[in-house]
Image (cartoon, rainbow, N blue to C red; front, side, top):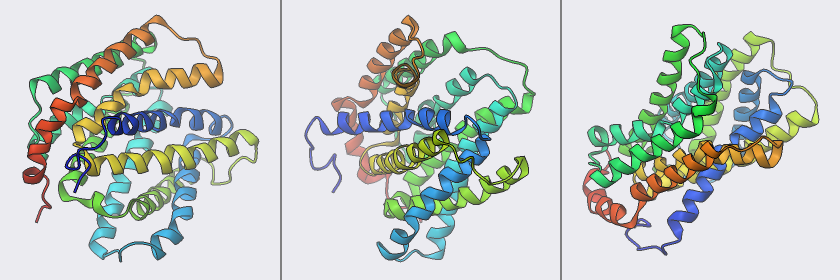
Amino acid sequence: MTLLQNKPHPLVWPSVAAALVLSWSSGFVGIRYASENADVMLVLFWRTFLSGLILLPFALLIGQRISGRALAQQMAFGVATMFLYLGGFALAIGQRVPTGLVALISDLVPLAIAALSQPILGHRLSARQWIGTALGASGVLIVSLDSLSLGKAPAWAYVLTVASMLVFALATVVQKRIRTIDMPIHQSLCIQCLTAAILFAACAEWNGGLTPPLDARFQFGMAWLVLFSTFFCYGVYYMSLRHYTAAQVSSVVYLSPPVTMLWAWLIFGEPLSRAMFLGLAVTLFGVWLTSSRSAASKDKARLSSCEQPAG
């Protein structure tokens, strides 16, 4: 039985969505603190390594026995949703793709998921949901306008940015299709983190080594990234995918840019702009259209026939 089938309290989905967008956008805070005196790849290595190491004893002792096939699947998703997604954007920024453009492209994940959901999951979005998705993308664009520029990075770096976004979107809908999200979250997240950590270790070693700076900013940033941006965020994300459609879950990611700016204002004192509030209003309306009860009820009728395990 899913949350949709059990007719949950109307505040359940808004609460889940709020937790998801807050934790999703919180990565900015941790990265900002931890990368003050450290290479981004080093930060990503320690983030994924510590997360996987903490989860390892729980993954081994609690939950179902992990088959070789399930292990291979989760390792593949770790490469896609952590190493290629996070690492791709970090490398693009390192090649001087403007941060505003990287943020804009990364936050178009919901649009890609909506487009991929029909051919892979059989989820045909209604006109109302497509309008909501378009409004969400428009709100992200409004928020990003002030910092948006093309820059002078090599062409492959721009391609990498788009590819990283598409890889994450594809991995999300494939996980939903083959039901790998049914594995206990602590087990799947452990495997994905440790897999990504191995690859980030190679990148960090290439860039100068694996020794972390022993300063308070790095330690605070790492604690934030591990506990909130990894455990809480990915836990809420995968839990949501079990009970709601991929398009509905991903639509709240559109709120990440304005919420990130609120984080920056609250913690770092960065100024707010009128464009941020306008974009936030447009995005909120778009997310409401995509995630409204009428849209969810239509999706409910398709869940039993469209989300059966493949093979």
